[in-house]
Amino acid sequence: MDDFETFFADEYGGVLRTLSLAVGDRARAEEATQEAFARAFRKWRTVSRLSRPAAWVYVVALNAERSRFRRDRRLRYDAAPVEGSEPDRGGATVARIVVEQLLDALPPRQRAAVVLRYLGDLTVPEVARALHCAEGTVKSALHDALRNLKLEAEGSTA
Image (tube, rainbow, N blue to C red; front, top):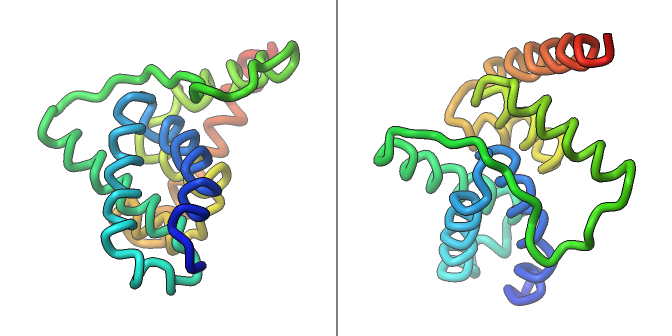
């Protein structure tokens, strides 16, 4: 990938949406996403040669958010839809609300692992790097999260 502008246009919205779900706060996700893309721009010669430059951006964005979280020592869950996106209609709106509620019920590490792996399409090793943990920890978090999501979803339909 040679052109940063094309990369930015193609990837920014997806990274922001995924990070919004992972972090649970759209404003914080937007700050981290912007910071990560700014770093990617400054290091574009190196980043553009990576096999998955978007994965690098996810890792940098999560690291930025983690640093900000440590400074603030508080976490708010208040994911919002991405501005400028088409308004959802009917079933899509209900599905989004249900998914957000289910994700909100997960502990932060499980939530981040699920969002990065399944919505961000990162590999297990990439998720492990983003979360600063072992691959086995990611696999365990994903297993536990999927079990918890299943139990939560079954409980909400009963």
